[in-house]
Amino acid sequence: MNASTARFAIAALMMMPLAASSLAEPGQWSFGAGYAPIVGLRTEFSGFGNFQNPFPVPAPGGGSDYFYSDGSVQVDSSGNAGGLTNFWSYNNAAQYDPAAFGGAGAINYSAFGSGLSGAGSVVDSNVAAPVGFELHGYLDLGAVSFLPSLVEGRSVSWGLRTGLQYARVSNTNDAPQVGSVGTITDSFNLGGVIPPAAPYIGTFLGPGPLLGDTPTRTNGSSLAAISGYRNLDVHLYVSTFGSYLALPVTKKLDVMLEGGAVLALANGTYKYESTVAVAGAPTQVSGGSKSSTRLLPGVYSSVGFAWHVTDKFSVQSAVRYQFMRQFTLNANGSNANLCFDSALVLSLSATYKY
Image 1: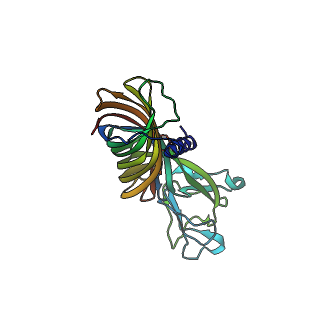
Image 2: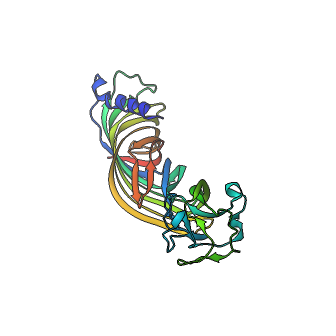
Image 3: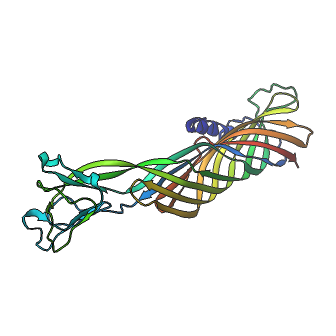
């Protein structure tokens, strides 16, 4: 049931008192209690993968110090006269590319061009709140004379309904995610010089083979593996206010149509921990925790059955569409949402008329 359909049904039920042409003598209050889990909930987790660049390098240009995971190019004692420096180092032979720059040769260095912020997003549909109970009360306001009855001796009746429901949602998601981290390759011109065998470390004062101090930069990307957990734990205290129609279909069985307003108090905690692994860098761990209490307004509509075991005692079952504003928590940049767009309450209760 979508929200517009629910609102139409609720409005129709709330207008029944005005449409009734005559009412029987008001009846008693009925009170009940029962099991009322919620199904069809949805949780959304996002922004839980963070990776800080461990080797930031400046933009390409001469006269700067560049530090990489596989070496460095720095300003020497001459101030890099002529755009050349002897204060450089590299770690492995694979960094030497003799064919680069038209055969002049180059030393290639690798680094991360960016970090990873707020990566990772996952949705869990069909989340349930299996722990759910409710208390409810009905005030019988009598017969609705303009609606015909299918059962002789029994009239369609209407009244007011109120309820109080408790439910707990606890959902943990540990699905792995994949992100992308920007990478760069900086190539420094050897100018025809054959470099010393790796590993090589030049000095500030020199002397030593000269290397161009301005890189040619190529951008790329590397996969980031995101693991860890996300947990959202919410306690819901839901109050409902509305009206109902009781349509007799047999001497002991009624179809119950209900609708009205919802106001819930939600108290929840979001916790997460994420580990991000990128080739060529140390593993990084981030996490956070946040608790909050908020009011969630909404609407509901319901269809169910009431079986009258005796004149005083009855058993009821119903399916209630219960839409409320979503509950959102932010912990250290990561968001957790509990959504009620498709939430259904499956209730089974016993009611006694006083």
